[in-house]
Structure formats: C-alpha cells, structure tokens
Image (cartoon, rainbow, N blue to C red; front, side, top):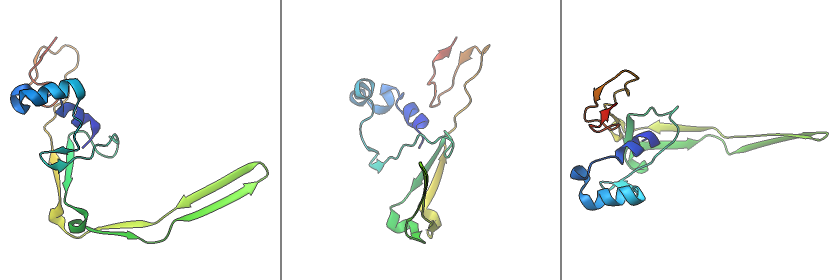
Length: 132
C-alpha cells in the first residue's frame, strides 16, 4: 500500500472505526503494524505502486522461491585522486502459487479541479465534505 492510501485510510469517520480508535487516530495517528490482524507494509514509491492499488500476499514460505544467482560482487578502481566502485548481485523470484497474491484496486476518483461545486461521494479522499 502506498503512503497516499495509508494516509487516506486515517480519515475514516468515528462511526466506521469506533469512537476510541477515532480519538486515537486524531491524536497519535495509526501506530499499529496491522489492520485486522494483517501486517501492513507502506511504501512511498508511488512510481512503482500507483495510489489506489494494494497488493496482498501470503507468507513467504507459501509464495514461491527467491534465488540468489551470484554472491554480491564488488569492483573498485582508483585513478589518481578519483575512486570508482560498483556493487551488484543477480537475484530472481519465482512465484509458484498464483493464488498467493491478490490486487485490490480502490475506486479513487480524481479530485475535481477549479470550478467544481458540490460534494464528493463516499471515497477515501474526501468523505462527503463539500467543495467550495
């Protein structure tokens, strides 16, 4: 899940999450590592994972294989007062259990631009607040 989606998850009304949790979210933010007993991994890499897409996967032992094809290699070259270096490693991933991964696509409409008047529908970005 991207940090954009995770931040939008925080704006749930107290009627959805309960008053004690809504109070805690307002004061401290969401400080747990799980949502409904599921571990959550949040990334800021929105160029790799688009906002509105959440991937769910099983424990690594049920997912597939992770291969290291070569050990980490290190190369260094020194010329006069300059030092050049490079490190690399070749890895591979094999997903053996196709049912071990699922994608959730959130219905996240674009935020309207200037000139829009009305209210947003119930979505993650603006839960029913009027737009002026």
